[in-house]
Image (tube, rainbow, N blue to C red; front, side):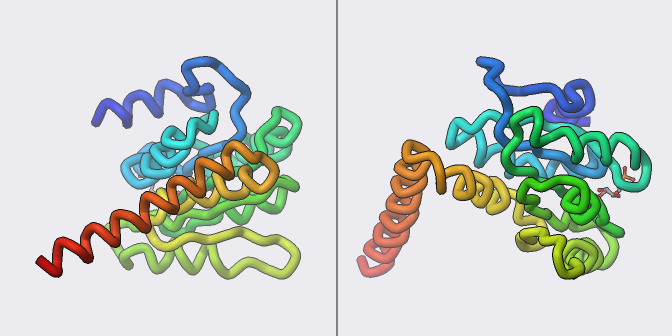
Length: 181
Ligand code: RP5
């Protein structure tokens, strides 16, 4: 078990922010085995200094905990939920059903079916219960999307996102220049 894996299982639903600010993003996953993928979402949030909480919440193995998490997240100050799961990935959709917050779903690829099962389980939601689904394994984009949602009403975060986008653009220009030499 890797260090980050151990940390996750020991810190279920505990704030990971060193200054103990109230978490603005809830980062949850169906199993600690999802962490190697979901860690990329945490990286994006850390990069933008967004406080978040992380934990394992399973739609199938801990259904009551999942409902409790979803129903209380908004009152605790969480503004966006990122939920990752693999296989029969019902976690993001079920959480979306029980919270008014925006939910971003991350299809986690497992050994079989290459994550297509996870993708289809998450993306095909019934009308009225949206989940913003990112690509298979696209946890970093899930983190960035959470930042953008928060940035819509947070000018400082919006400035940081613009700077990040400028960096991305600059890197492409640099690679283009390098190829021309
Ligand atoms: C899903 O089942 C989890 O999200 C995980 O992707 C998958 C396998 O879980 P483990 O058997 O590794 O705990 O609910």
